[in-house]
Image (cartoon, rainbow, N blue to C red; front, side):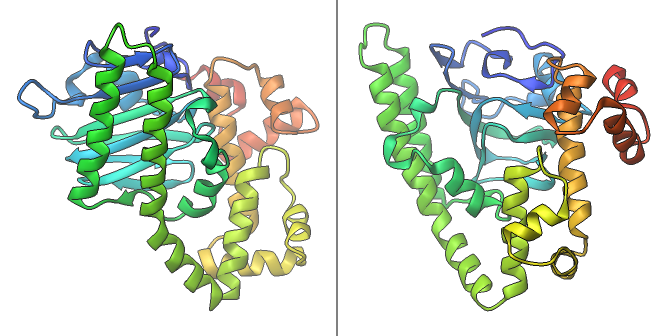
Length: 310
């Protein structure tokens, strides 16, 4: 793994790792902060993690990561939602998401599975990204029982042992099989949330419209900023859609669209990969000048000033 750089497009190979981490082909990673006595090591005291845990800017994730919290707490921002990860919680962050760690308790104990290669997702759930985006939008993180968390930890440790065996020839096959068990268990944890959501949606047409709008927004915000586009997709008038979204969330549809676009713009500008013209193009603005006006109105500074800020 490469040493972490000041770059807010976060690749799997950029994660700062110690000797306890286990990596397969720079595509699949297992890591934890378990000490020799199985007590948590204080992540906040690790200087190598400071760019990740104390960054004032969001990161664009270029890999999928699953965090299993065994003790303590982590407060973070995931896309536009702020959540608290605590004991027996599981958090799934999909590739392409934008995240930022806000606070970590000294006793935070975590195991993580991260991967950048789609082939690690078993074929029966090749569409799991869509499945999870649709059903985890408002229920983050997932709660597991102590027994369920112990099963996840057993799978994590089994995968570690296989990666550690230098003469084991079927590591990729075991990883794929192990991930199938992990993913099916995650899907099982989702079922109560899905059931409650479906029951709520069935009796509340406005909430259903709002959730459908938010799902469309997550899929199209990089190219579509017009309320009319989303209203058309939902066969509604722009005025009615905005009224419904406001009645459910307390915010207008245009506000949600703007926040998604600005969050993406911030992550792209800080990624170290793109200049301002390229960010403007990626977000489907007619030109760099228009993007600059839009960004400054919402953020209070120009894209250049934001990109150059420490």
